[in-house]
Image (cartoon, rainbow, N blue to C red; front, side, top):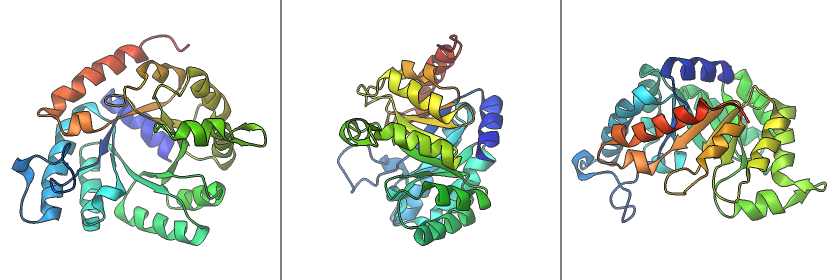
Length: 266
C-alpha cells in the first residue's frame, strides 16, 4: 500500500520532500524553462535530458518525485522511463494528474497509470465519485491523493467559503477521504490556509493519510503549518528544478524542514 511505501522511503531518505517535475520547453513561456544545455532538436529528448538530471540531483534528499501530466502531453512515452529512474533512485513516483471524470473513464486512466508504474496519482473530488475511484486504484496497488484544500487563490472561494450541508467544502472532502480510505490529501500552505484548517483536516482523516503540502517557495507558503500534520510530504518545484544548482537549492529546505520536524507535535 502507498502509506507503507511512504513510511519506508522517508525513513530511508531522512526526508519529507517531494519534487514537482514541471519541465517547460523554452518556447512554451518566457521564464522558468529548461536551460539551453539540455535542449536538442527533439522535444522528448530535451524533456528526458532535463528530467533525468533533476531526478539524479535531488535523489539524496527527496523521497518522491511528481511529474505533472500537463507538461508531458507531447511525450507520454517518456513517463515510464521517468518512473523507472525515480524508483532506481529509491523514491516514490506520483503522477500529478488531478483525475476528474466518470467511473469508466477514471478506470481507464488508472489502468494506464498502473502500466506506467506509478505509485500514486492526484485526484479531483468534484465529480463526487471518490470511493469507486479509490477502490479501483487500490485493486491496481496505486495510491490516491485527493485535492482537499489547494494553494491557489481561487481555493479560498471554492473550498473554504463554499459549503456542503452547512460545512466548508474542504471539510466535506476530508470526510470523503476518510470514508473512501483514500491515501492522501493535497493541502496548500499559502496564507489563506489557516493552521486551524490544517488541524481540522488532520483530525478528520486520521494518522494513516499522507499530506502532500504545496506552496512554499515562490508562493510564500507558511512552512510552519507542516507541524500540524502527522505524515507530511512537502513539495518543492520551480525554485529547485530551474536553479543553477538544484541540489544546493534543495538543501536549505531539507535542513529547514528537518529542524521543523524535530519540534514537538503541537
